[in-house]
Image (cartoon, rainbow, N blue to C red; front, top):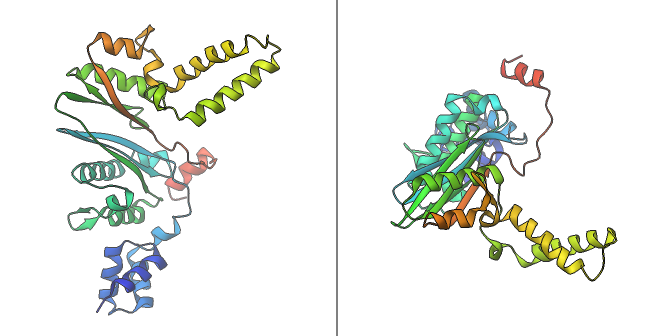
Amino acid sequence: MISAGMVKELREMTGAGMLDCKKALEATNGNIDEAVNWLREQGISKAAKKQTRVAAEGLAMAKVKDNKAVVVEVNSETDFVASNDEFKELVNVIADTVLNSDAKDLSDALKLEVNGKTIEDLIVEKVSKIGEKLSFRRFELITKEDNQVFGPYSHMNGKIVSLVVLEGNDSELAKEISMQVAAMNPTYLNKEEVPSEIVEKERAILTETAENEGLDSNKIPMIVNGRLNKFYEEVCLLDQNFIKENKMKVSKYVESKNSKIISFVRYEVGEGIEKKEENFADEVAKQMGA
């Protein structure tokens, strides 16, 4: 009998998916060593060797279904693979599957099944076939009310994806605000969302800068407050100048349309991942099997 412990042990040894490990053990009557060879012969255990590589390219995708939406990011090692139709289809399948689920975190999402295989197993199969490390990095499920609309937007073929939830029925406005989010990269919706420790840290930096500039000490608090407003304009969506009406704040523009921004999500592929420098010619040669 093939136990869960045996499957777990083989998975840790090879990096193969749980379903493939179970098949390997069944095919070799529970012999771990033979199962390792079986996976190697199938080309599946090759995936384990790629886990130490850096996957910082890839695609982000937003999908909407009724009152629910999802934003996902799936990574590859190179842009070549990210533009590959097979990789795009994998991202599409992952997005659809997560959208139709109640997954709470990545661990839940990787266990979701597609035609009898988990998302984790599908990724391992694609790693073996495509020949690069692939990684389902993150996702966010978003819900809305009936009186709200989604505004999804994709930039640079999925390198930056944003999604806005807008109160009101103006889908075009929701998309415009989503484009603002993609272009201007706000961190927070409004000033109230900015953590106090971040505000105080910024205030301290601005105060020290003003003092180093030799400004009148009596005027420094006022100057710091003015510069702090500039900080809010950078990090808070509602305080930014609207890219289509540069003299109007996003908050005022949305109000003029009798709407209200509820929330937003922005994914930029590879953000926060330390990318390795790679020679372009070497990358081409690798893709050609040289």
